[in-house]
Length: 264
Image 1 (cartoon, rainbow, N blue to C red):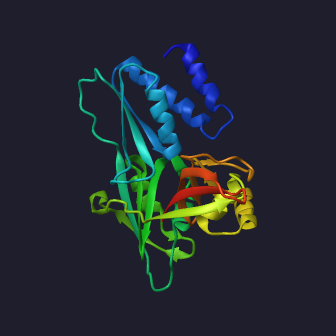
Image 2: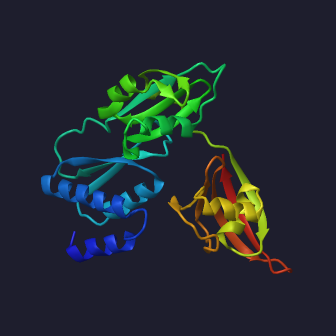
């Protein structure tokens, strides 16, 4: 990649949540070009995956694949591979660790499990999806830290847990329920669209945006007045995500008609 093109990409992400990810992925891409081999990224959220696609498209001879350990995973690792690489990559180095507890006395959430794992000093980028179901949670992670989690994760909050190596092949593909929402809004402001998409008041939406409970295209945003457009993805902690599929014309009262697909 020419230095000018590299600088354009970095300038685009500079100051955003994606800056550090872009820098790291460019370093990986250049290492692949130099060695004609392959490199694995840390776990990336959907925004990070978009950055990986943008960067790899800017290099000649790079191939890009993603895997999160099971079909439909949200957080995935990217494999950047040179087209001339003659070897065979061993895979994406993803392990599945399973934590179990007594479900009669505790109900643990994704946030509880993630907090306990990160409390061990593990960086978020080494952890993929966390799938709590009833009295167990499957934790997708880098294989290098699987044994460490098994040996050290003994409590999640005040609940004792038993941890062992799990089997990612037993994880069913992610199935999301989708509901189409048609609404009229006073404007295309973020708080108005969030309120319509997630069935809450506009003031509640503004509060949740300020509390960083809402992501726009997988990025934090503190501005409830940000203008939304077709294709934007809204995600809200504990409520799923919604995609703005259509922005239609205005009603006789001057309100804008929007269509969203909300996923649960």
